[in-house]
Length: 322
Ligand SMILES: *[C@@H]1O[C@H](CO)[C@@H](O)[C@H](O)[C@H]1NC(C)=O
Image (cartoon, rainbow, N blue to C red):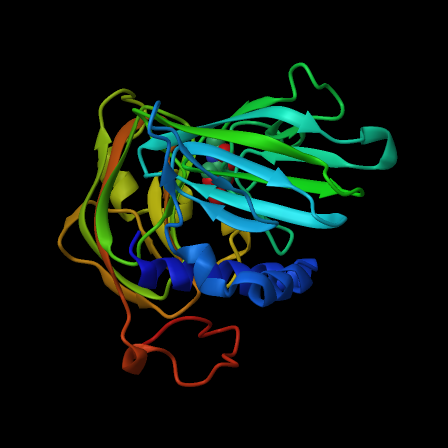
């Protein structure tokens, strides 16, 4: 990520996390190093094994394979690091050199996804695992609780330490994911193709910027089941058809709490184009498993002049721009 999108990204995270009580730590960071030091690549290559190493901060965002060490210089009661990889990657996390006192209330927890403002990405509805299995708690089981692997390109770690010099090292490794389903985009512009071959699940591609999304290809192919007529599916309305694409807009990360901007349940080529003036824009593919579903789209950041004029939108026209 270049510095400008990273800045936006981090500011977005900060605006969302401020209500979680993380804001005072942001002030600490600003006082200590300035916000920009978080964003700059203050990375030092280890000359021997080329492992990227740097200190971990109480509020941090990590996008690079490497080894990150946190040492508390004071009690730290609410720390979190957001980890993001490329769309076709998942993230492996491994703790080492853990020096904490679980009996005093210290903890380190990893999460399969992101939690912001109490909202989760991927949403409970779109993640294969039940919520409790998405948390890995070091204190409840130091043997198995030291490693975690995400199901998508985002993961998170939370930690709390009561005494000085507590700490740990976090190793991040990004692994190839041949079937990416839920995805958080790092960038405000790009393109993506989501394919769901005969899988009964839902996948969301989330872009946490106000963007224009252009669907370039959508096919909901009839290929496995003969029970459903594709012709009837085309015109029976999206929610009845089982398979469709929805565009969502909202100001949090939980797709189940976002506002539907458009539903598309027919095959098309280069037809749909939509501006979504929210903090978060999502393309969500709902699949019954009866078809090979594929959606391709492009997206770009909205200009300042394209954003909705009033900040306090009525719920009806929540994030729609035109
Ligand atoms: C996919 O989403 C639809 C609509 O939101 C829901 O009815 C369905 O149960 C979901 N499917 C799965 C497998 O979660």
